[in-house]
Image (tube, rainbow over all chains, first blue to last red; front, side, top):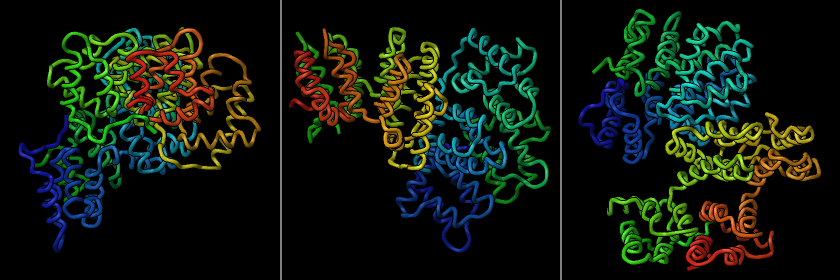
Length: 318
Length: 318
């Protein structure tokens, strides 16, 4: 479900590294060449290019991107060039620093825990320790207050079974347990957190469907009826990321674009982290949710090399 | 701190595979050759031999060991030949099956969580999902009752920072929190579980030291004074595995040997899982704790090829 367009014949990483070095050298930078090379390579190919660049020129590709590009285009290209686990660990760190100013910043941690594979989550936890000299759990404990802390700690610690395997009886029984807790307005009840942080995504989707069949309304609506506040927002985000990650990311992109100005950090995050995951699906649900196509919205709010880069990642160029 | 004796010049894995095949073929099995080859290879070398064997003979090395060897020797060689993460996942599964018959069986889960690197624990969780179609957390939830379940779930979900980095103030403050909870007989208090399942091992050792300085007795003694029962046993095991894994494993070996008969499963587990980790330290503390040397105790309770194999792993042969 990736929108990446990788050519049939991919040049050796040394050749890509050389092309990038030429784009940086001399008067002015050839931004088009940077987009041309990097936006058509998979995550593992990009890491090979980064290594080849370091080997050939004894310089860091990330450092050279930082000094040669600028603005939103620079930020997007750096995010895209980092190893995905390293990138998400850095985003999680930034998010935790800003979390005091709003629960919205914790979105990225929910996305890593609830809309990624268990292998990716494990790699992010490992990268976080390597980069920041403490575990992500320790940072969550230090800056997020209860009850959000309890929920996030369990979510980031999960390692879910990742194949499609359903236990229909368990789905019914756990749908009931979720319903009881929501009725009692106990969204952070141990059992709720346990179910959401332990069960595999297929099982949870079945549980949410069963919930709706048995109790007449979707689980996220019932959560909304508990009231307002950070825990309600967080739990709705968790449910959406598990049930329908493409709708969640369509929402992130739309929110980053509507209104005055653009939230480039959120726009980059959604497009860059999902281009190789489910961008095709995001592009399908987007016009159903918002009438416009995703491309039209991106074109309306961005320009120049930055726009070209994002459109290439979403499969709308080349 | 490994006791493995790997020759300076290790033969290519194909040659080792061939030597093993010859040992199995023909009338009778050459057990000495099996020990000779496998007991002097590291975990990654053993995996290469396993792959070469499969490639050369289109047969599984594990299957051939199973059909050609017998008794305790067979069990030990199989455990040793499996990939360490796969081996520990299988041991955890077995332990959970037996856990109804006593908390002692949960030892192996504490060892994987509290006496292994975070990378190994992550690999075991991954292997568990791949082998058993559910996560280790789901199996713990299904068979272990509260409050042990709560403690084990948090321990197996940890991914601790793995370098030496201490926060002395946090050690003092968390030593106090542990002391308050123990005084109130709340060993499964959220904060206790959180500290033990989140902090890195160096930090926890400092916390336990600070505990003793501030409150006059070691934390495990204070836990014992809470009473008897499964939670007390489990928490003492957790503290020992974190504070001094070599003493824990010395105890596992000694307990497997003393009294009537030998608990070969426990003896194998301790020697095989620790040979490449800290067997040198275990051998040092053993005579201090029990007067006998570890070798003398192993010799007293085992015989033949099985004895030779264990002694080779503990660095006492060849």
